[in-house]
Image (tube, rainbow, N blue to C red):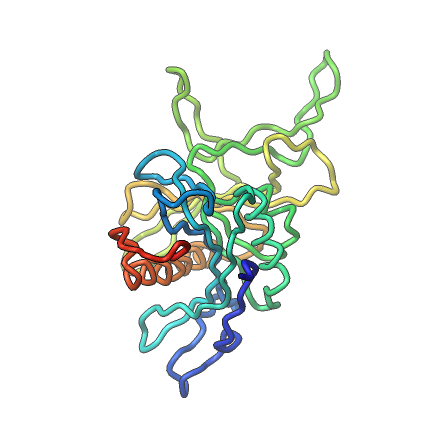
Length: 278
């Protein structure tokens, strides 16, 4: 069995059914969402990897797949266009599989597409992948650094790292850690709601030393009154804050294809007969 990537040839993000399906565009960009999903097989021995399950709070045996979709709509309703499916071979570490999936994403990403991924990927993986256009959801407790030297102190060795940037305040060991003052902030209207945002620019991962050759990015904290938890989004692109938010919202159509397939084959109740049925 070929466990590599399978291209689903249903068009290249353009209309397929007599003008019914249309790609969603934001500031001229189409959205390509990438996700990793597990088809849980707790009783299958020797033919599966393990993937973290948030409900069980531990890694469980699973057949792991990477999924790519283009975001579009039919009649004003979101409908994903499945572009590719990639099987994670047995014995492959999850981190290695993420890198392979990002490599395939870079190869297939067209000049008017932006890749969107969830917090299962890291900002370092995205930067090292060489993908030119992406939006990544970060953890709400993330900390990063400026890619510029802080003011040098009178004593001591010259600094090698930039100042810490903490997008959201939090507590650590009983101590309150305040959020870093944003470089910019503002508001915009979306679906009748007033969305607030804050932004920090010229950033690098926390363990990265200051270097003009570093690939830098920006972080946006989006606070939508419809949700209790703010979104922390990282991107290398220069887009309007509202566009950054809307691009991430277009990631959700990547979820239904795996969920639907699990229902179709009875995996939601573990009623599976074939050895590798997923």
